[in-house]
Image 1 (cartoon, rainbow, N blue to C red):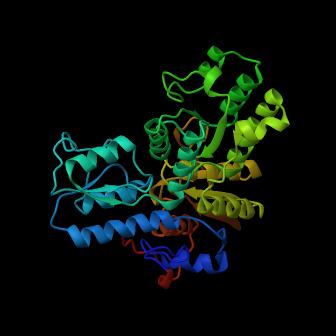
Image 2 (cartoon, one colour):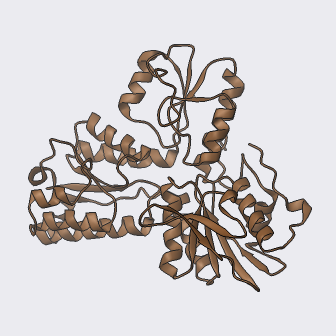
Image 3 (cartoon, rainbow, N blue to C red):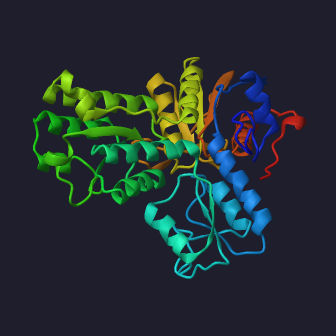
Length: 393
């Protein structure tokens, strides 16, 4: 098996407590019943990316090392990158002027989300050493989008405008002379479907989408005759499926069932790790725990979608970033709809409590383990010493 390609192995940020919960899925400590889904946390693509960073440091440790942008959407991991001496070229951590000053002595790490074509070409022109940690599952929708362009289909992306992965996908479409439309959710997909069916005009369509969801030269009447769907790999898989089905029905309503092969292309770009985490979360919330704690960066798309799984099941779900979000007085969380960071007091019930946990694909096991430990501490329970989490990269 190629290096770092075994999805059953954790290569970085391990936790003895999480290893124990992964084995059994449940652990009773005092008044708490701790539940863990079968699949959660670091996907192998993220683990692979961090392992490749460690290899790059060992090989090029005496050379200036840069990250094009956040390696993954987790604040602790990105802080660790900075502590290792790796600096950032983009984002709010960027070093002013560094991108323009790159030369052949520099090493640049491309994040797991990939990078835009223009960025990759720039790095090539500067002659830097590139360490490309792009997840193979991210490459899959890239290839599908290029196929759509060759067939003269417009690419419809279920994703988030500005997300690194979607930006990279759309740059590929532009580079090959194609067109794209980004829809964030079913509401925006419905607007697109209504235009295809002829019930709204182009102005209403564009008003219902993000301003950057299409290119300035996008012509809805011309470019929505033939469409192919892909999804940003971190999106909710069931929503991606519903969006594709709705757009397929719209084209069938407009052109007839016999014409679908000529005007619609379905997708098979759902990331298996994302799908597995979502399916496993659905099963654990079906047990109706008292609480569902979802751990991951507030800017992590797949983590937000895991929290929505709890909402759909009617289980109190809290999207928290790490152990510092949990105290005896309150829990700090990201509100799903507004994106606001809020605090909830009296969040942990008295008496016996069942608490289910999961974590986004960018969340280290060690961070999740520290959250579980903090919950136990708040509940007044003691974790066996051999299961205590020590944070190591």
